[in-house]
Image (cartoon, rainbow, N blue to C red; front, side):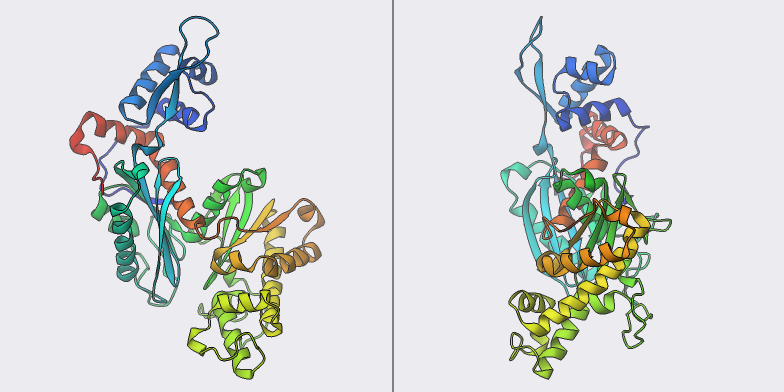
Length: 423
């Protein structure tokens, strides 16, 4: 994922021992100094030094003593989740979700706001800043620590240089540095990635199954995208455009023209935009009692999903066609990347449930290599509404608690003038 640290001071080479000790305490794998010596193999002197550093940085606190096997009982060491807060935002095609979390990634408060379709960077980011302001003003007690970092999921690919790529023609996002925009206002490090990658990271964070290490996350909203986790690591491709499953060609129908200029893309049949278009057509033909009487401009993809779940035949046919198209794309992806888990999420995918998972399962079983499907799980998202912000926050926290950023944190402790703004 991309990060630009325009406002942070230069740091020395990372102290891997400091990061190693903190990770073990954070994960609960070792919570006393003797345990840290035993698990890490480091000398007692180094462990004591690193623990003292982390306590001085307010990232670790020493609690009550624990049972001793002989000698002085050791004190328990705990990670201080409220030593700072993180802001996270997921920018979609028609709206944004923002959240504030503590340093454990626990989402403390969220806010949602609609965006105009095709919003340019100045509009979308100003809206995010306004929501951030409200979150900071109303933040709960557990988020009173200084703002430590910001995570942003954007609509579309992010290149290795941290610059966004345009997802619409002349949308204004090409070459735009979202990280610089936020860091200039908040004076904290900023991490930016494709919103679907952030969603995949957030979904994996909420699940404890081994399948998350090899997962295909498909986001169905206004458009369609995918995030791929391979052996526990997000895969972005050579230039950051991996996962554009919505532009896989699955139909020869030349009338299905995609905004990308091609025809027959998955998005022309299964995206929220396509589902809405087909729903309006069904309403105008009088084929859908569920949609009857609704003004065309008020019909949304969520209404077609609701109609299908309620038994409306026209809506059910639209969702069946979307599920079949999605199944073709996912079956091809299954043969290519061999995931252990496929999750269908996003604003549409999270609500549709079995309307999508069942046809996808059928298509995968029929079209994918048997060895790739015998233990494959296909599920709806468990946290579709906050997956993006959860993943963005997790991305920030992993970065903040890395060796390099920990040394920057240590520099701020030694020189209070380097402390970032609290927000």
